[in-house]
Amino acid sequence: MSYLLRLVVPDRPGTLGAVATALGRAGIDIVSVDVLERGNGVAVDDIVVELPADRVADSLITAATAVPGVQVESLRPFAGPMDTHRELELLEALAPAGDGTAKVLATELPRVFRSGWAVVLAGSADQLTVLAASDAAPSLEGVRTPWLPLTTPLLLPSEGEWVPRRWQEMAVEMMAAPLDPGTAVLLGRSGGPVFRRSELLRLAHLTGLAATVTRLPPAD
Image (cartoon, rainbow, N blue to C red; front, side):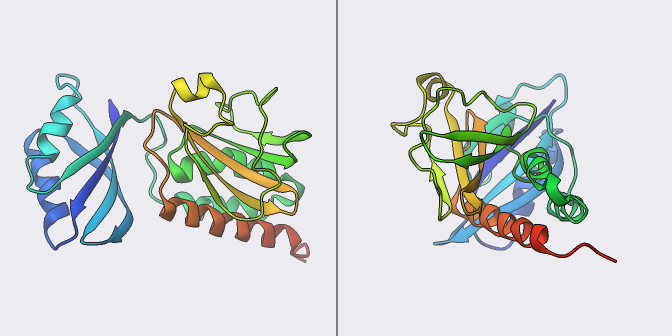
């Protein structure tokens, strides 16, 4: 079974290699590694691993924390695709999308950010329209979104007052970024980990690129 392991590690040479060695000794295969943030002497890494059938999930935590200074921020099952070129594939899909940009973003962004779902929204808190949604996206019917219309990227933690109770119980962490005036992209994942500022900046960058692509004239 695959898991997404988020680690906070000392930002010094050899630490990530030591983690990889510790996981390898425990019979755990590393599928991919993303360095999310660096600063204040630490780095935040997302590691997708494949756990043998005869091992329990706690063995991941035991192996990782055997390296001095390593902390496990979160651990959750991962059922996403095992690819390493997610952002490139998104940009390639956007080029011919035209009016289908919203659908492409809703489909591809969960892969880029290893989130559970994505929706593209238009309107305001009281008049909300869903332009596109990924397969796993929850219904937004009756959900009031006071942060719309959106002009800047925004982290939306699960304990926010506007978040429906059922989402709070599922610890649905979210982030959003504007796409065009009056349009925004919302990403969510249940059970964490929380979205970090670096992920929010990546989302803003990608939605900015998507908005630019949609305004380009068609290729000859």
